[in-house]
Length: 195
Image (cartoon, rainbow, N blue to C red; front, side, top):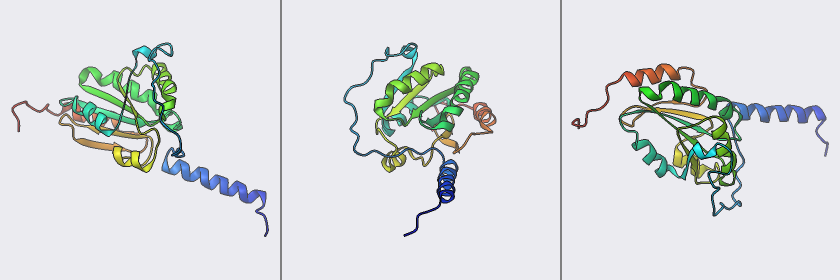
């Protein structure tokens, strides 16, 4: 059996990297890794005490979203191992800071492993992510978690209107995000007497 020439390995390697870039960030699934039974104290890193980080599943996320009825909600699905997620995250913070007083709520959902909770907290503190943050309790990026949270690639961004309906979704950097936020903020808030 003939071995592949070195140039062949380079071509195959470039194809694999190219495919990963097209479909977004990917992380291998480690089904044999058990979830830790304890969580890290929020004071484990300087500044991390100011960060709100809940751990939960899609039901916890739905509750977080429902708590913001009457507001426009921007959601950032991300992970620290996803380069494009990390690259965009400062924009999420800036967007939150710009529109928060006008009625925008922001929720960031991390799909890091539970053992990386300290790393997630440290990143959020460094970025001054003083909005709601959720770490998925699924502890991986399996098909199960993708189905539960209804996503297929990271990063992913969603924008919900004041009634809680998802109106926009992006699977790459949302170039028209501010325009869409302003559009939804301009919509009339639902009346408590409306059916």
